[in-house]
Image 1 (cartoon, rainbow, N blue to C red):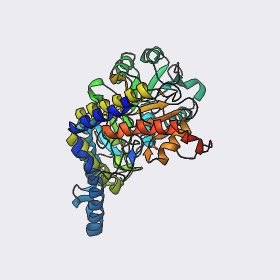
Image 2 (spheres, rainbow, N blue to C red; image 1 turned 90 degrees about the vertical axis):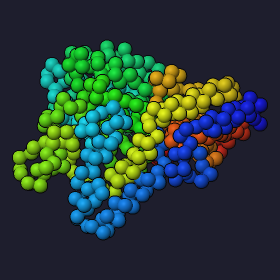
Image 3 (tube, rainbow, N blue to C red; image 1 turned 135 degrees about the horizontal axis):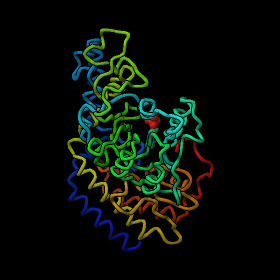
Image 4 (cartoon, rainbow, N blue to C red; image 1 turned 30 degrees about the vertical axis):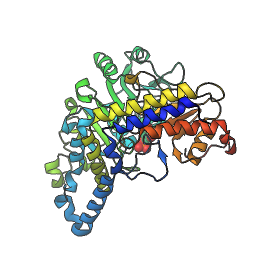
Length: 431
Ligand SMILES: Cc1ncc(COP(=O)(O)O)c(C=O)c1O
């Protein structure tokens, strides 16, 4: 049974939807029929424009064969730079500071191997214990590759409560033995948004190179990477940028590093006008493009280019404003109706808007995994991150306030009927 106040919240949701300036964009996606999708922070839904761009590139391949590299629209040879230039405004970079290339973890390797120059006195990479594991695996292997000891040279800032990081603590750890810092913009589990500007200025004052993994903020939050002076960054395109599973990723390098020799050179990073001279001496492009390695996946790149149109047209300021309104609404519903016994939910995401990203960490102390399963059985798609977090991501471009209200109603129904008890306690391979 819904209590009457929760019923009255529906009115608020419908009113918000009726005033939503971004409502128009919802129909530009392939929505999943009968499903409330709350997983856009893992894999964004398919925009019709991405589908159209893939089909167009496919047609070009069919009609042009190899001529597509120069005669495609845009020419495939320039696609990575062109899509990068368009995406640059989303992260506050200049058009030549961003390129579409590789994949997230591979881009981390390409960038960190370039900017990590350990010496016996200055050999530490500073990261954090809440980052997505792939970054930590990659950093550990970079340290080992240089002949340093992971235990001593990869330092992880600790979290006092397992959810969030304290910028003061991070800055305290920027000691003279640190030569590179790599942090997430938004923590993948709790959704905390770090103060990138402050961290960057602290690192730069100390002569430390700083990079960010922006996978959980790109396409959701405005950034000013170039003005803040961030040295490098990388992010995937498949979350809030809606570009499709495993689509090419982005990397950013600040202009002051143009001309630096990429540590993992490949022919697509060559000075573009001379790439086909086939010289054996490597001349890097004077742009972020220098950090490309291989021939780009054109079908994947086309999807990214197509998906980008909606985000650029809708505008990041409006996306962020709606996203914050959606997450605030959900947090309020949970705190008001679902936090006390017998529900016991807790919000693990910071309450302050300037400290949170696009998703909400809904914590349940004992049954988060099975509640997540019960939501999926009711056609609500969030995801579960151990030990106790259900991530709810109401992506602004295709989620309504009414969707958010319904998630709260489903949660209440699941708890009232103890529906989660029908599910196994065994963890699935993918959640
Ligand atoms: C913060 C972060 N970095 C990296 C990745 C994954 O990287 P890749 O695209 O290389 O699989 C994820 C995946 O969800 C992520 O959340």
